[in-house]
Each structure stands twice: as C-alpha cells, then as structure tokens.
Image (cartoon, rainbow, N blue to C red):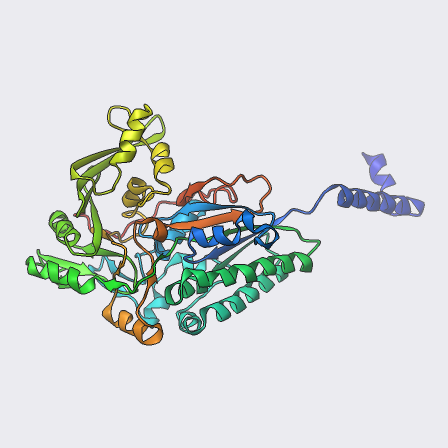
Length: 470
C-alpha cells in the first residue's frame, strides 16, 4: 500500500500517466454506458378513452399521432369519476395523500359542516394533489382564464410546461393540464383532439431540443367525460324529495333528521351526509328521484345499492391473498351485473357464491358500469371525509349548485358534458406510453395504472375525519 501511495504522488511523468489512465477510464464509461433516461408524466384532466383511441388509431397510418407509443389502455377511474378523488386514487400507491372531499366544497365530519368552495378557502384548505405536480394550476384564477378559450390557452400553458421540463434537471417530471377538462365541459371531448395534435409535436420538439438527455413519456387522464344533450340539474329535485320525506336539508349536521348536501360544480354524482341510522332511508329516497341512477352506502359488513332497477348487497373477502366478492340482489339487479355472474358460473369461476376480483374486472371493464364492486366500495375510502350516501346520476342529468349552472348557461349555454357518474363514458380515461418494457393491457384499474412506471411508496396510514358513529 505504501508503494502504491508513493507511486500515485503527482510528481513528474507519473502525474501524466495517472491523468491519461483516468481520462481513458472516463472515455470508456461514456462510450459504454448510456445516460439514464428521464421520465415525463403528463396528466390530461377528463379526457375520455375514445378520444385518445381516435387520434392513435393505426388505421390512420402516418396520420396517427404518437407513433412509437403503446396503447391507449382503458384506465378505469374511481367512483366518483372526478379529479379530487381520481388523481389521489391513481397516484396514491406512489405516495399521494387523499383529498379532504370529493370536490372543493365538501362536508367536514370533524366540524360537522360544509367547508370550502370559495376563492380564499381554495388556498387555505389542503388538497394534496394540487401541489403534487411540478407544473400545474395552483389557483382558481387559471380556471376563469382558460374557460374563455380553453383550447388556445391550454395549449399555450402546456407548451410552457414542456419548455420547463426540457430545462429541468429532474429525473422525473410531472405535468398536469386542467384545460382539457374545461374544453370537454364547455365545448365537447372532440375539442380535446387539438390538444393531442399539439402535444405530439411538443414531445418531438422536446426530443430534438435535448438529444443528449433521452426521456420516456407516460400520458394518462384521470377519468372520462359523458353527455351530448343539455343536462338536467338534480339538486332541487333531490332536496325536495328529502324535505317531503320529513328531512331537513342544512349546511350543518345538527339534529336527528338532518341531511347535508354539498352542491358545487356541475358533475354527474353527488353525496349526502347524515347520521348512521338515516343512511338506508336517505339512499332509498334519493334513488327514487327521476334522473338518479343508483345510490350506495356502507353497511357494517359490505355495501348496499339502491336503484330504480332494484336493491342489492355486496361484500368482499380475502382468500389466500386474493380478493373475492359476493353479489346478493334483494330484488332486481341495481348494478346490471347478473348476466356477468351467470357467465362466470358457466366458466366455473364462482366458488360458494363468491366471485374472483380479477374476473369481475375483466368482465366489466367495458360494461355500462365498469368494475362496479371495487369502485363503489372504494368511494368511501378515496377521500378523508367520505359520504354517508353516494349517488350516480343517469345519462342526461347532472348535479350542482344552481348558481354554477346559471353562470355556465350565461357563458357557453346549458352544460352538455360532464363526469362523476359510475357509467362507462364518465369513467374510462386512457393511458399510453413509450416506456420500452411496458406491455399495454386492454384495461387497467386506477390504483394499478402508474405502478409499471414508478415504484410504490410506503406511507403512514391517513386518518379519516369521520364521525365515530359511522
């Protein structure tokens, strides 16, 4: 060792030899090892699967967008199929915490009242997904600006985001675009195709601008979008039905026969908050309102679904590390799932009345209500202030504050497109990528979508701000 140390002392010709050896090793490393690829994640809010499938259709030949990418895959979103539930649902496995509510205006179980929904509260009440992204909208002012010309302004902001990515030294970069959601609501999902044409060129430009810094791309949406005709608002009929049945609809949960509703944005789902003994009757009342497709609530063991199609209970259990479900209609078929049950019985998949989770997912990924058991069950877990009763609107209906509906009508006419419901078009987002070793499946559940591209993260359990009586 003393001899080696003496030889390495920087004196005379030995210094020159040492430098040559070090230089040669650096050249060998540079020639033999490629620099690690960066990874770019792009979240486009509320883009339906079919929009991505249309622009990437192989039948378009050279006109197809995103050449060299695999997919699109159907991304089966959360229920409700809305951003504050879906983004944490998708990114929760890699560390993102849940939102306090399904929308910016929500019911807080600890304070037992409605909170949020205003310009000041937007910044004061933490929704962790809003701060997760390296590039995204940080305040509500951006929504107002983008609502005027959502496509033009959204593409401009997306280009700025891509420029920031090129200049960034981060190995992993996350971009979120809300403008696609606004364009879908106020124009139509077809308008979003212009975003895709612009994004395709932006990715090519970014590669040309950084030839020595290769990167993979993962693009996905958090949920879909449904509609077409002017949507009918369910808020007033739902409120009236509760009042006619002897319930008081208030903003605070005070008293034995009180129900709290939280109308805010114009979506196709809604929630009711009440004491535990009221959940069953409230669900039946709301499910009977014209335009409500179904309502669900938790039982001590399982979940109950009420609909104009019938009533049923479903449960889950884990067997040998695998998830199984039972579906027990009391009358009718509220989840439209009995045909799939019969097919699974014929295939020998049913065991003592229990259905395997994987088979349910595969059988229902493109059904009218995709993956219904898992998504309805998780609807009471995806936020820290879960509903007592959660409802899905029928096609052609929406739910929201009358003031919001009026403002939308004044601005762009009656709203025709929205999301939130359990149904297929509102649910199915997309996922595509050029990551080399990823094989695109036909469909993927929301909480598995990102795991092929990002290692899961262990995190401490989050406390739900719920009433102990629930």
